[in-house]
Length: 294
Image (tube, rainbow, N blue to C red; front, side, top):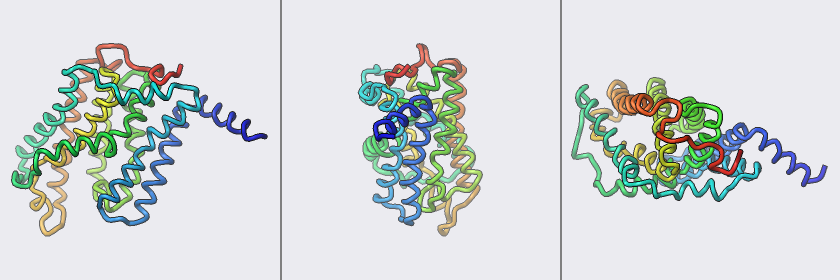
């Protein structure tokens, strides 16, 4: 068999199993790179963060390969990351809603006795850096794969809510190397915190679908994603009180996780009730046509 025949056979298999191929490539790319980072035993640092961020390009790499092999439109797919004309309303939501979610979580944290220290809050201007970094390297880069490819293909067959749950489960599992790396935040969590994080991921998947289905913009989703991720920087929890003598207080750390998850879950429930589980939007949901596939 010639190389051309083998390549044609591989492309044909990918075209017939688009989602399976996407997940195989996505998981392989990320798990290999982030697994190597974990095995290297790097301490928390910019080097570690950059390498982990590079590994997080697995979803767009997987989507790009599948679209290419299936004869889709790579330019149309990538173009979703440059759709910025979505109206002031949706940019206001993408940029402002993370602060509302943070405020609700902090209020609940304080109401339940969580210790705070306002003097520990960073300079507000750092949010611009957190937002930019999170959009292109710290999480938002994933969304060309999860939301700009996998979600539309699923929505050809399933409701927006079901599609969100499928994306959410695979998205959560994809993070596994971070839990095996003791130098990451995920690696220091106990089972209870991990389960709460999974619930947050599933709720977040609904929020991300809602943003994407209403705007068609992966850029808006990535900015929204970065904003949600960045809110932890501005949580006024008293870290010294939560880890006296360097030993984490399990109850207080669990309280922080729970109160952070509750607003996400409540908002997801509200969005499903208001917009409906079928579309999570006021218009038709994007399908595989957004990447030039049928």
